[in-house]
Length: 116
Length: 447
Image 1: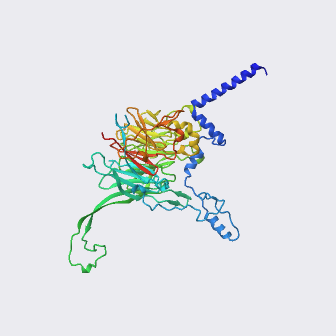
Image 2: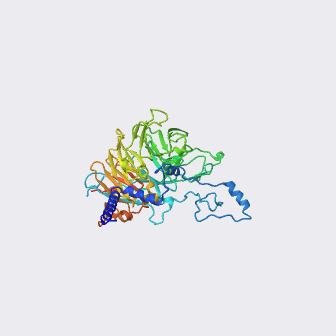
Image 3: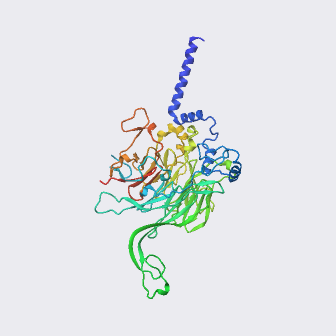
């Protein structure tokens, strides 16, 4: 390549860089969006849409199948079934929940500290 | 230094702080709602543990003319308990989402408190007299043998130590499939509305086994769900009008005279979006977390993630005023999405004259905007500035490179210290600010 071409290429590149940084300055939100997409490439075809709404509607859902539980208890004499991992709050079908695993649903019988 | 809320030379001072000082905050102690009653004499708080604490302002005494009445504990009770819906495998939190007072009609006070599924009407009454000298029972309550009674006496009312009792008078249950986000008492003082993610119901305060569904935005196919109801409120004077806001940043005003089911709005408020600024975050940050009518009923205010907007009910195509709460967060949206802070629901409130508005932010900061002077101020609720009558010093967040001495940089903000709930006394310059598990009360400086 001739010297002239190299110089013009270098010029083009630095111009693009300038444009990029200008865009970032003028639109920080676009920069943030780019960051997010880089981290999570599969994230939402529907921006902020259905997935997040469905999650909101399903808040509080806990799954416990008493049938599975009792069947497993009966079989447990022979086999050691996988016990719960460190995250005791997630009770899914993978392991058999025991009463100790389920988070306690006690009401606060203690008076509020605001009234103290 | 000119402040906000009452003209020149206006300054906010620390008055009181309630709650524990310990670093380890129990989840149950997190305050989830704050509300003054109509006179401002009572201040109610609800927490994640399902408890309600009511404070009462003490009468101004001649001995201490410089302190406006302080708020002291009046009553506290367990409003809601945790429940489990076995049929739907759904855990129901006891967290109090909202408290709304009823206008006072007799000596007792009434309030509505709600968690995700059930609304309760509580009566708070005082007892300062006790009857003594019954005919049929002893002083300690044991029944007397009626055949041994030979004379008749009239029981006498004797004074006793003041006892404040809270009793649940109505329980409004089983009307919401989704999570209740708002309740609002109607100006007719007979009905109120409750709103969940997809539906709004109208209740009569006397009737618990029936409610009318007035808005239903549930699509036939849940896959088509694009927006949810985020807040709803009754108009302060027109008992036929209410508004509800959505996760898409729109507000619909409905007139209950138009139809039994208000699926078709009477007015639709939406600010046109600049298409060039559209991003993944646009819809999330436009979601309205709170809507409040002004006391006059002429305006309404909405809070979205970054701003507060005032709308004139007569103009649907854009707000009349927009106030930036923490614009510097725009360059932090990625991490705020990752730590879920972008979904935080901030509330907002008007002062009694509708001349000023207030809303919370992070780092225990809260913001006030004076609509007349267009001045705004950032203040902090912290134990450091909690000496009695200490004037609150305005705070500033620095966004650029050079940080001035008293400024705090965006990266140093504590996003776990969120002020989501604030309340302004209906008549005076007294505000209540909930900072996680602590309740701060600030007053204007008496010059």
